[in-house]
Length: 189
Image: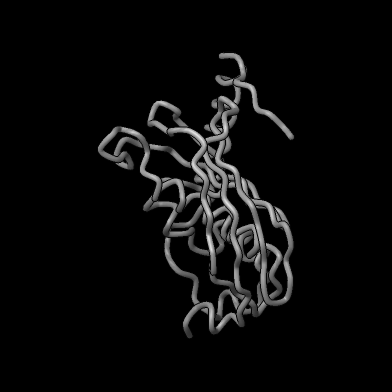
């Protein structure tokens, strides 16, 4: 079992600075948010789709703008979103609402599964389980949700995700089951 120790202030500051630079670089390349047309994506694998988004060749993902999180890293079977836990996402107690955390984790685990899909395939989340480890507050500044595929099959994909702060602390953990669909069923066309 791996344990996470809080990093010293210098490490946290360096990580935060690196994450800020990563986000600025990514956001500078992204196109405005929107939905890609089916003819733009039908020939793309899941990974190729995200590569096109990352180059600004396809619209960036609307959920990111709405919830203030951005895709900062991805590869086959892995996807990382970075988010800002603003006070506008707080619950009445002043901590970040579990729904924002769940949305961020759902995005990282589902997108990790999506990166494994061939052209002509999509997915939908069948199950999402989130475990909240500690309270997340706006003072944390930035968090990253990293999703990794456990198994990707022809009909079902499984992934897990971790939400961590620049301080190295684990805030939440998630697992997902995604049903793999023909792209027309996934997009409703």
